[in-house]
Image 1 (cartoon, rainbow, N blue to C red):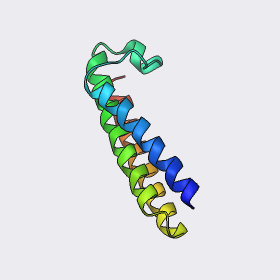
Image 2 (cartoon, rainbow, N blue to C red; image 1 turned 30 degrees about the horizontal axis):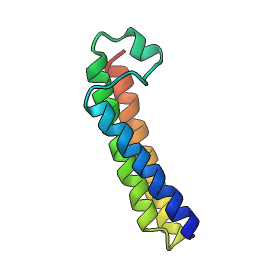
Image 3 (cartoon, rainbow, N blue to C red; image 1 turned 120 degrees about the vertical axis):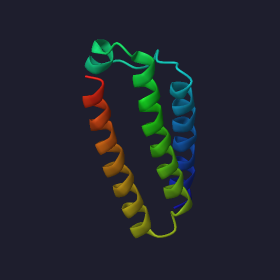
Length: 95
């Protein structure tokens, strides 16, 4: 379980870096149909940055709670469900 905790910790750090970059307005790494068709590219990047920041917090919680497997599954399922619904809302808003 220690390997899982270390891996999740590093994934959360990388996600934090990406989220902070997006929140500062750096949208060079974003691509896709919605990004290409929107006029507010910086606003779209900041909205995605908020979701990625939430996901990074959830991944870090999983790394901390890696002692029991049921806790990890519940936390990951909640993070995936919430972030997916927020992502769909953002995709529809900027379409």
